[in-house]
Amino acid sequence: MAKKTHGKNLGKKGLMAALARHVVLEKSQSQLAKKEALQKEHSAQKQQSMKGGGKVNKNKKKQQLNLQKSGYIPFKKGDRVLLVGEGDFSFAKSIIAQQYIEPENLIATSYDSYDELVAKYPNVEDTVKSLIESGVKVIHEVDALNMVASLKLTPTPKSKKAKVELFADHANLDYIMFNFPHTGRGMKDVDRNIRDHQQLVLGYFKSCNQVFDIVNNQIKDDFAGYSASDDSTNVGKVILSLFDGEPYSSWGVKILGRSEGFRVDRSAKFDWPSYPEYHHRRTNSTRDTTKPAAERDARIYIFEKFDKKEADEKERRRRNDEDSDDN
Image 1 (cartoon, rainbow, N blue to C red):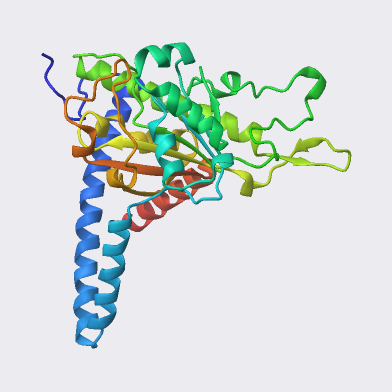
Image 2: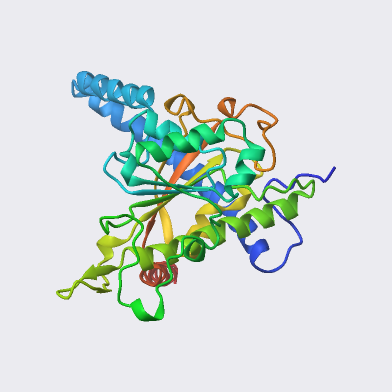
């Protein structure tokens, strides 16, 4: 059995080694930031208490408890969402059953063909049928790394100006969501496992960029056609759900997202009770993971698009200013 590296990934060259080093640095910075935040919060609470603000703090704590009780849903009912890597479609089934989203606003996809799904997952026929009857658009054989081709979003030469639509009303796509991405290959080599999943997540971000560029950044003209638009408000967001701990921490998803122009907008604990119909399965079998998923801590990350060149330039100027102050 290979010895776990816990994110150090020593002796590796190129991108993966750089990613691993960034992961270690990110963990260290995160711990310092949390410590500082806790100290600030403690100081603020103490001052508020001295000013007679105990009631305000009490109400704030009550709101936080209510939020934790209700669970975190990463999208609103009216948002348009594309789910990839759905497996047995139990997550799609759950968010429809709980009325977190309107059925016509959801597109649920699987990597497997319909026949492969039927052979792999019990009751998937009933689940898919129920989703379709409710108004959900279900598509099979969709590769999260090549969604443009899988979803047939590439315009034909005769219709280059035509808007490539995912929804019947030409609506923009708000979110693309991938729950617990996995290659489906079981590997004992920890470093190779991390490397393969970094490539998977990186490919997902790249594919999301391509989909948003095609589906969202187009507007209707006066001739009932569609032309390109640079309206940044049309840019959608990327959702990624991951288990806590290793090897997932070593994937460095924040760094991978940033390399494709995405940064974390917000994140929250994945609240299993909020999705009672959802059953996380192994990618390559009907069995659950070694430990039942609902007993494992996980998080939902929402990434938003940002101007990477501008952010890098600001960081460069900040470092230059720090160097000047030191001198």
